[in-house]
Length: 560
Image 1 (cartoon, rainbow, N blue to C red):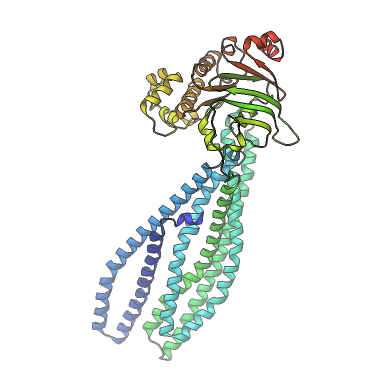
Image 2 (cartoon, rainbow, N blue to C red):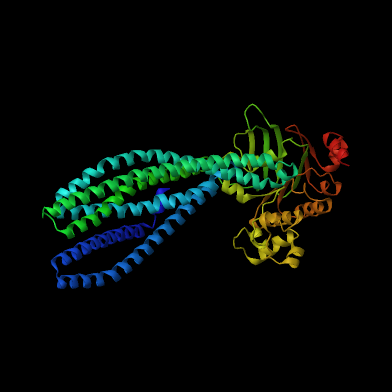
């Protein structure tokens, strides 16, 4: 992921470093001007002072323009680097399979793409360019100092060696603390997400005190870790600052001694004191920058490792088709090897027909749909689309082939149209057709396509959200529509309308998991499969199943 900061951005980075070279040169010139002014005063030379004044007059606008230009280029480098880094991270995240993503903690991604990004910007990108400036200032100042007085320069080097080593050794401790803060930030973000999503449950069960205690515990852990990191970072800075003070006093004393001896001028002493700042500051901040940069790099590695988890295999897979049927033969599956969920499933779903899957809670209905969506590939037996096993099909082609409508339809806080099109461009006649087939004409006529749905569709009813989900799948061009308890949270009248909308769709294979036992709806399915305890125990039309007086008959009679 590191290369994303520099991809098509090396020119901005190079000019940012070049800008630091220019700024280092200007800083050295300032020291020269100060020393020259003192020497002109000592020499009582007005001509020399005037010449220096003209040089400063030319220098000032050049410094201003260069500084602004350098900052502009540096801002461009930061902007492009962060944008590319986040875009690459999100594209890798989107490349994960549905199974992989749902098995991971979304709080980890929220934390790394928000809290960690801020740390990476300050402690990696800014630190990288600032390090270049500090290093350039250090060596430029050192070169000038060696030229002016090798003895005084040697004293500076000896005074700074030990504090630099101490600060560098302390950098590992800061990296460890930075990683701990990142991990706790991730945990805190996850908890906040859970508490906010479960706010209604918290209120209903009057669990405010309990969840407040949980929040306090997480918050204390996070803030304690941040305090520890701040203290340790400050400790590094204190050690470096102590080195700077020691060096400055040493230079003052030795420079004064050499000036009294007549070996250097007073202007040289002042120049040395000014140049000493360009040695002191790097000694003070470079160890901190290196430590923070190392810590930020650990965060980059962390995100890279997170994105690398559960990636789909690179092996070439076939495209999914359903020109004939989806066939299940002797299918067995369990989330854990010792806890099977589906047993010996044998059935088929022919192209263009409608199927209902009914059964009690926990009978395996939703698991069956997840398997057809390619959610799990560790099944035994056969699950094939036109003879090709699901595990041999690419997930992209499966998602293109099938649409899914679940009980909880997710809607973006955007317009009805954007929620139907999923922000893509479609011919207007295709959009109108999907809206009409999904039964959204009346809603569109009343509110308009630009009506905002609100967060997760809060401004719409359950039936309206389900119709948008149907239109979304139709517009996508799905050949197979999987419906998982889409009407369970709807009132009877709305549920019938939504179910009828699905059954009225033509040239589409519809597989509907439902708990509703209305004859007017069930009698319209081409075939009904009945599940019990992970087994497919019955199959047939509505009338055939009633006549058998088996498990379906019991379910139907209990519901009516």
